[in-house]
Image (cartoon, rainbow, N blue to C red; front, side, top):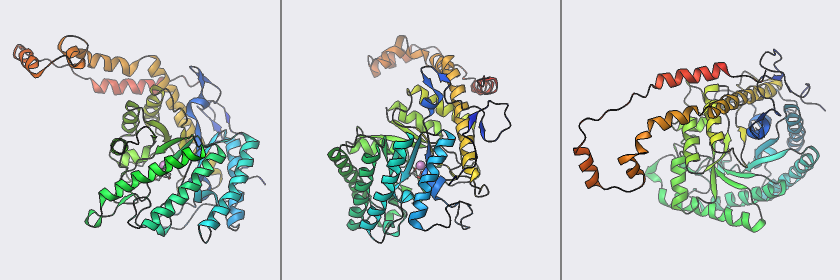
Amino acid sequence: MTYFDIEKVKYEGPKSNNPFSFKYYNPEEKFGNKTMSEHLRFSVAYWHTFTADLSDPFGVGAAERDWDNLNDMDKAKARVEAIFEFMEKTGIEYFCFHDIDIAPEGENLKESNENLDEIVSLIKQKMDETGKKLLWNTTNNFTHQRFVHGAATSSNADVFAYAAAKVKKSLEIAKTLGAENFVFWGGREGYESLLNTDMKLELDNLAKFFKLAIAYAKEIGFNGQFLIEPKPKEPTTHQYDTDVATAHAFLQKYDLDKDFKFNIEANHATLAGHSFQHELRYARDNQMLGSVDANQGHPQLGWDTDEFPTDIYDTTLAMYEILKNGGLSSGGLNFDAKPRRTSFKQEDLVLTHIAGMDAFALGLRIAYKMIDDQFFENIVKDKYQSYTTGIGQKIVDDQTSFAELEKYALNLSEITNESDHLEVIKAQINQYILNINNGD
Ligand code: XUL
Ligand code: CO
């Protein structure tokens, strides 16, 4: 059975009119010592692409999928066939999933685990045949009603135990499939209201949960990178892993910061009132940038719309941060993104990924050129040059005191500041975007 009636998607360059071709993503083209494919490490998200039906709070599913009418386990198996064909045709090397994306939940935990075992062995066989790799897996500890008060932060200790059992199974799957990372997104780790919440106990428990997970990973020899995916709200009013800075402080407080990095999602950054670049920069500056959920929000909608990334301004600045980080190491660019409900055909799954891959490929091309020219570096060097000599140098080197600074200030006749010319910088970025050599 064939699910995508197309040839393998090829690079045809920016002048091509073929929607099933790459305009900017040329996988083998080299930038420095890495190919585009090695820089970008694209990944497909099982949940949006093979499990979701495009329902929203106001409407039922709209997606038309070949596996719609199959029963639970047959549907799960068809999806495995479909995702591997999809990765082959799009040239995407990685995939990611939650436990419940790949196999239906049974009547109880034991049955759910049996379903998982059957599908995981099918996935393993497909991975061995095709060489495709698991970027990360994770545990869905938020959809089922048992997680109504949270999972690791639930007020009900039975739920803490159940959530732990599910993560234990997911870690075993990660080990079996050689996952390069393991993600924790605290889907319901937060609160509806502080009026009835013991925030201290909940945060202590969350840290204990992570320590137990680390101990079990060590015990079974799973060496993938642990990642936390911050998000400020939705589904809870307040999510504990609000943003990178908050989650980093939490990790440091509980002495967990050496065991984790961050999986940064663009739409979560904007929900937190930050730019995507801000979250990447904060993580990079603290050696905590692990992986990226590549998507974008909608400027007029205030929720997590998970659109495919097409804004090249954003992808350029994201790729700038990633290149300056020396790449993503074991991480990648995972399309945690879904077609709009109006793009309901199966072929839209391919077309949306092409759009996202091209947007990041273009971002890589532009950011690479900017770094080659030391564009931002020169701007920043000029701006902060007062810290490279005299009193500025002393401040940087911890060689001064308030008394000395007062003496210095008393002797200053006048303070002169320079203009930032920020609008010129923005105009120059436009020039970079418009003048980029598209590999022609
Ligand atoms: C939810 C979200 C999740 C995580 C994995 O907003 O981004 O899909 O990426 O649980
Ligand atoms: Co995500």
